[in-house]
Image (cartoon, rainbow, N blue to C red; front, top):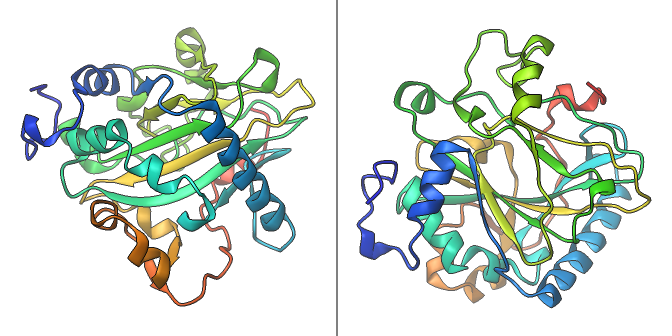
Length: 283
């Protein structure tokens, strides 16, 4: 068993061997599973994202800006026909268990949409470094991304600086934004990602990253699934809920990990996970 695997996890608790993925998360801060889903499954996902995006943009607070022409929308699990397929995928389940332990919690479902005209974001991480990571070099949450399109160079691909999940400096604005003097380190390490429909990536949201300029006329929607270990508090920033009927339809194995309110009627989510520095746009 990898020394970076959660100590409470026995190897036989995992459905698939994720040893190499756990190592990659520790070394690079990101890993991926190619072809986890069929392109047809992803095309349905895109339909659901586009419907949710249209609804969210029709009301105040429905979509939050992450820079010019770039939006984030949090949604409820049952707005995605493929929600159970995703969270119950053996690779997703095994990776969450190996890194975060058997008590992991699904706390966020949402999507990012860079539209035509989106600009380079400043280099950033998505929240300040937790003390467990600083003191013990232990990851307490994971972010999974599923692209809804085949990513091309001109569509503003996601760019990440591998190995920077451990970077720590009092100079980081709000604990998230490295100063410009640090940019050469990230630019030297930067890797652009070109996932295809069906691929899933998993990363620490502490790994320094940015969205890049979208030169095309196409949008590049990406699903975001946020998962916390027992000590993480990212769930406090999210408002996902499920209806009672939907909750009862879920497999017990999914219910055990789904950390959200059970309601009679779903209310549209007003976004509250803003990342102030990203609203400003080009670095």
